[in-house]
Structure formats: structure tokens, C-alpha cells
Image (cartoon, rainbow, N blue to C red):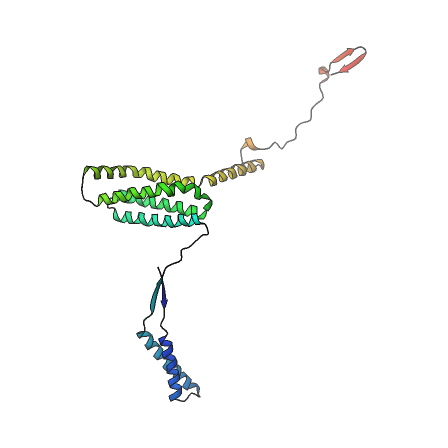
Length: 241
């Protein structure tokens, strides 16, 4: 909810009435008269402000929109997920699980931020948003509820142990999801690096002999040696090879 503060108009009315009364009771044709009237109105206004409280109106905040309905939903669901992770971190006493939840929270935040900046990557996280993330929160909520029971029963204990053993796998999955968002950028950078390396090599700016262009001219072909010339007599016609 958004709070809007409405200041009372009574102090202004009180100051105006003071001016009016002063004009009716006292002369107003010299500068000192106006200064006294202004001072009296200011004092009355300040006193009235002390006794008049401002009214506070609560109005629902208009949701921010990017113009992309799917992106807006991702942002809203992402904020809810981060809030839920913070609650679970505060509620779960086990320090190891809490630390892992904080790590998930950091990874999820980076995933959301990356997609928010690059909406074209939305299709890459659909399964993450529709299954992996909500299922992870469901598992952690079950762990939280079971931990609050204060019972070391077979079902509760074994389930909690399974969750604890799976947390590292979930973190790895989140890390891979974040890494996959940089696939196209990594490819572009690799291509740029290869082009840059080849250009520098051609200009002789590196010591890589494999990429250097031969700058020296090809030596001219020499005439065959005299001893290599062969004469063939074919019916009076001499051919030199």
C-alpha cells in the first residue's frame, strides 16, 4: 500500500483570518503595519499547525509494468520467491541449511536480474520458473514444517535428511541455470577473440608464426639449366623442352 499524506488547510485559514482581523482592527497603510500583520499571521499559522494533524490515506500501489506480460509475471513471481526464501532462512534453525538457502536466494536473484535485462532469454527459464523453483520452495517449506514439530520420528527424520542431502544438488542446478543464460554471450566473445587474435597476427603484432602472412614476394622462376634442355628431332623439327 502507498501512503499519501494530506496536510490540513486549517493553519492557512487561520493565518488568513488573522490578516483580516488585523486589517479591521488596526491600520494597514505603512510598512511596519504589514510586517506586524504578517508576523501575527505566521504565529497563528504555526500554532494551528501544532494542533492540526495531517491525514494519511493509503492507496494500493500501481504495479510496475514493462509492457511484456510474461516478463512482468516473471518479475512478480521472482520477488515472491526471494521473499519466501528470506522467510525460510529466518525460520530454519539449522545453520547449514540456512547458508544453502542464502546461496539459492543469491543465484535466483542473479537469474531474475539477467532475464529482466535480457527479456529474449525468458524461454530459457520457463521450466525453472514453472517447476524447479516452486518445487524447491515446496520442499523447503515441508522441511521447515517438519522441523517445527520437535519430533524425531522415522518419517520426519528420514525426510529431513533427504532434503539436507539434496540441497547441494539443487544449488548445482541453479548454478547451471544461471550459467546457461550466458551461452550466447560466451559464443560471441569467443568469436570476437578469434577474429581479434587473427587480425593482430596478420599485422605482425603477435609472435604466432602460424598466422603470419608471408610478406616477401615469391622468387621468380629461373630458366632451366642448359644441361636440362632436351632437344628432340622429329622430322626436321627441333623441339626444345
